Length: 239
Image 1: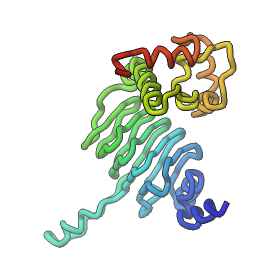
Image 2 (image 1 turned 180 degrees about the horizontal axis):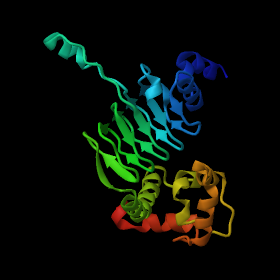
Image 3 (image 1 turned 60 degrees about the vertical axis):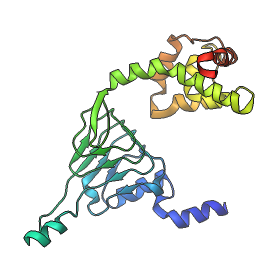
Image 4 (image 1 turned 135 degrees about the vertical axis):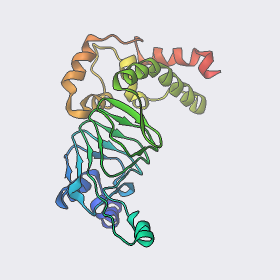
């Protein structure tokens, strides 16, 4: 309790995602209540004109993200040319977007719904909806559909590597919670899933859709233990 009180005093409106959302809306931004600021105290959102900021539903904004609605570059122009040239622009992040670590979003940008922005990107132009984009400057690298297909192909390999790394470090299989994001690979559809798997299913508010798809699918492995056994037998991964 004391630790939490100290954090509240230090971070104030950036104490949690909820307190930051409340604060941003109070000063004039439009931020949906289910936006998730992963590390609010390490995120910088331009407060000079908060009414220029709009963040839609189910948006995740990770550590180190910067969102700017103006520039001060006119300070250089004023010294050289004498006149003052104002700078301002809206930033809109539409529904269901993920903004990767240390991304910078400049004024005048709209990120379309269902988009993923890779870590370390500089977003200086609009990103169309259903896109995966990254880089400096940020560019579309594939469609969301293409990315979905790629992730489905790589999922099992990454889960195997996780199991092997854990086994090599600790000499035992990882607890199931370590693979909570991968449980579709091995969870028997006739057995209720545990609290860690349930939390993943509930994310985003569309559990009914996920559950329907889950119930119609088949696991690639008959049990978690069998999956782990096969993973550590794979010489290409575990060596």
